[in-house]
Amino acid sequence: MLENYIARLEVGGNLSTQQMNDAMNMLLSEGTSDNVKAVFLQHLANKGETDDELLAMLTKMEEYGIHIAPKCKGTIIDVCGTGGDRMHTFNISTTASFVIASCGGIVAKHGNRSSSGISGSADIFEYFGYDLNADPDTVASIIEKYNIGFLFAQKFHPAMKHVSAARKLLQSRTAFNLLGPLCNPAHVKNQLIGVFSDEYLERIVNILHRKGAQKIMAVHSKDGLDELSTTSKNTICFLQDDKIDKMIIDPQKFGLRQATIRDLQISTKKDAIQAFISVLDGTANQSMIEITALNSAAGLVVGNVVKDLEEGLQMSLHSITSGKAFSHFDSFIRNCGDHDKIKEIQQ
Image (cartoon, rainbow, N blue to C red; front, side, top):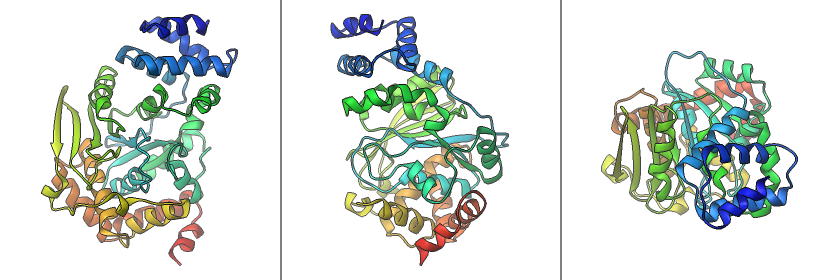
């Protein structure tokens, strides 16, 4: 019974891998009330999740999930954030994903509708007519053809519906906010992950390393964004060649203008769509374009397309200014969505 584990957590006790396996089986299925599930998650958060507990939860989530294996020649990556920074910025990682794809990177974009922000990655894809409930084989073939596809979390992790009500009851962060970006259904080994708090950077990289990850960049900006930001310096925890290094990067040293959060913020879903399109077609403000290019550059590094951020930044900015990024997105939607939606936005 989940109550037994709640009692252990309540006094600060950690759960073993087997105990967490049992708890997850109860969380991800029927038979336990939403209130009890919420209490479990709250006590787990209050105690503080150990790396072993998070790894056990992640492994069980993947066991319950649906998976794909696109047949691509290059390295498949994901570019996503934990969310929860509450900065109301435009969809930076989604926009960067299309720039990455236009530069030859391959992105299995895993995501959901927004929970704490204005617009999530699923909201963007859905607006342009992409079928969020496309079957796994179709999604795999889209990635193979266009270097990018969207893996809707609710479609590929159906068991998560059994814990959604409990999470809504809490209305606060739980372990699942951290785990969402780590359980990509394409089993990617290379990722750019934005993290809402500096304290989780190294932990997330260590957990993924234990699961066999090859090249991971976990990033957090000094002013709180779960992205690589041009508003401030950024902390990066970088896994490469089985070694983990922590570094600080200053975007101004790459010749980028120091932006303000206000330059990047949106207030409506319509703003989010407009910002997304305007970056890809090169008409957005300089700050939106440059932060997208910086995150795209990092994606190209973890995707083994370029050797460093400087090379990736040049490639990304050129893709945007030359029209290549927009052309790639236009072709994608022409074949995988509703092309009239692009015309509506650009009118």
